[in-house]
Length: 162
Image 1 (cartoon, helix red, strand yellow):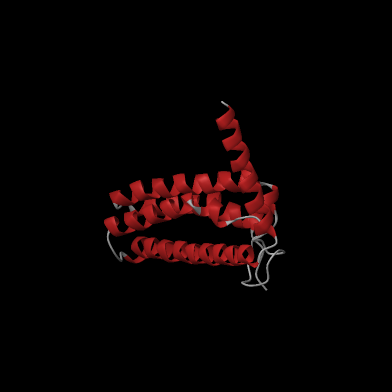
Image 2: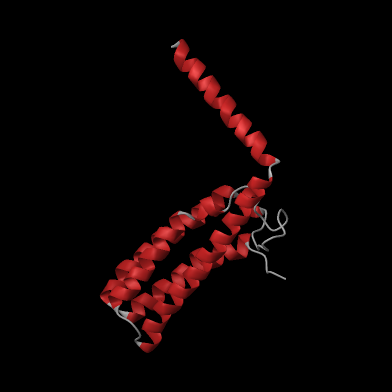
């Protein structure tokens, strides 16, 4: 028992030391920069995938399997979204690169993460609906995805970039 307590104590102290070191370390700033760049790339990927799905619905481009794959990719990437917003990576916290992430992400983390969970679920629904090839149903699900997840998150947690 004493060894377990001692091990937990040293693990806690090591975690504390790492956190204290990281808070004032330029490497931490680099990590924030990397997280911002990753999330911006992910969001651009969402846009490309949604545009491809819309092209299927409006112009018949691609196949139901193609767009189902894109919806699955959105769902998988959405699972990682909360981790792409580490502390000190918001609009008022960094200058390079520019970010639109508002402090509300960290002030209301529960709401932010619940929208991310909903994005995962709605994109998974879009994947299933896409497999049917039913363009009206796909379009309806894109609307739900846009309003309830993308739009809800951007309305609450994203500023306009200058």
